[in-house]
Length: 63
Image (cartoon, rainbow, N blue to C red):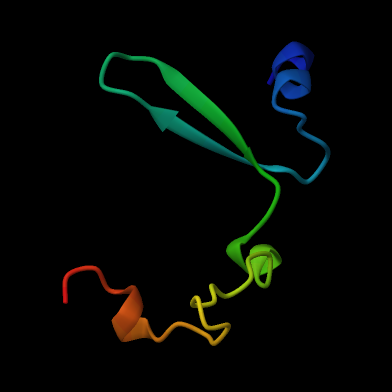
C-alpha cells in the first residue's frame, strides 16, 4: 500500500485494514483501530425523569 494512503487512514504497523468494493467499482479502505470490546463502557445508561434506570421494556418503542 502506498505511503500516502497509509497516512490518509492513519495506518500504523499492525493496523487492520478493511477493504470494501462498492457496486460502482469504488474501493473503500478503513483502518480498524478499535474492537467493539474497546468501546465497552463508553456510554452511560439512560436514566428516566425520576432518576432511575430505564427498563428494556420502556426503551422499546414498538410496545
